[in-house]
Length: 89
Image 1 (tube, rainbow, N blue to C red):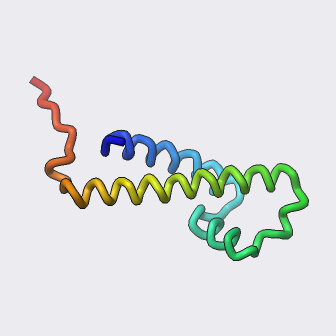
Image 2 (tube, rainbow, N blue to C red):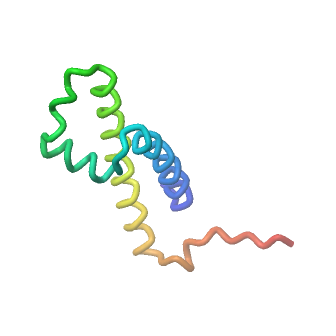
């Protein structure tokens, strides 16, 4: 995947996570830590919440992977070499 594609996907994932963060009132990082620690099991009985949590978790894990891929590519090439610069003339 190209660097600019990763940036586009990261921003899209951020927007999708924002919807869950606003709905449930916590940031995704805190949600994920609590979920992985088993601290949210009391919500398992609610179908909507269980579905939301599953999707939220998947989106967050995808975001983590994309950020890792971005960091690896940018380390290897540097910012100056990675810029998509197109003169306007």
